[in-house]
Structure formats: structure tokens, C-alpha cells
Image 1 (cartoon, rainbow, N blue to C red):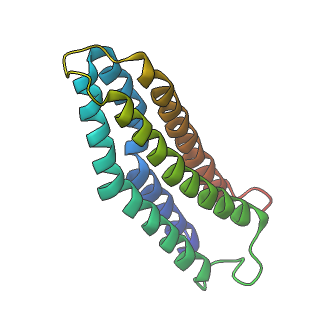
Image 2: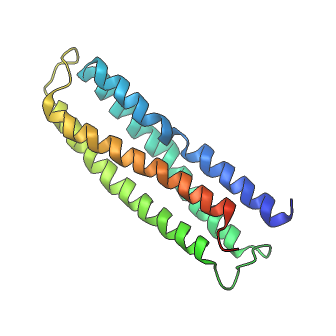
Image 3: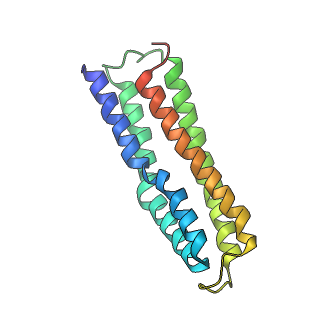
Length: 158
């Protein structure tokens, strides 16, 4: 591998490792929802902690490393970024903002719908819409990671 390709490969691996928990969260959510309201509260606490301590710092590092990669002398599009790179950068920014704003507000709604519900009680109907939207947002963020990684590796049009 030449210098640029090996840097790019390491960057893609870092993206998958840093944002990997994103792919597990919908499965954990579905499992918690089958149990009871207490399990869903535990899931929401876990999701918030993973977002704050792992995925958000990972996303910031991915963005910074991408900027460093673009400014590298090995990068062939240093002065004129190719379309695949601009598309992946824009997709990343939109997904990050959508994920941060949309997921946080949906988690707030989910917590509010569980307020006052005993831990052993089944998940209330008021939670279902927020739970569905969390699944949608996490699914879209997962698809975004895969698409961005594809654009970075395949570099269409190069």
C-alpha cells in the first residue's frame, strides 16, 4: 500500500471502531422494550453514556482525522477536493448534526413518556413513537457510516 492508501485504510478502520456501537444500539433497544419500563430506562442511560463518552468523541476524532488526511501531502486532491470527498464530508456533517439534535430530543421524549411508570410495568404506549424514532435515527446513522466508509474506500470517479 502506498502512504495515502494505508492512511485511508487506517482512517476507515477507526471510523468503524469509533462508531461501531451505533450498530448494536437498535438491537439493545428492541431487547429492552420486550422486557419492561425499567429495562428501557437502563437502555436510555446506557445509550446516553455511550454517546457522550464514546461515539461523540469518536465522531469528532473522525472529523479531525479526515481534515488532517485531506491536508496531507499524500492526498491527491489536496488543492481541489474530488466529488466523493465533498459528498462524504457533507454527509458526515448532516448525519452528525441530525444525530446529535434528533437523537437527543427523541431520547428526552422517551424519558418523559416513562416518567412515573414503575420499573416492572410494561412499556407504555406513549413511549412507542419515541422508541420507533430512535430506531429510525440510529438506523439512518448506521447507514451513513457504511456509505461514508464506502465513499472513502472506493473513491468513485477517481
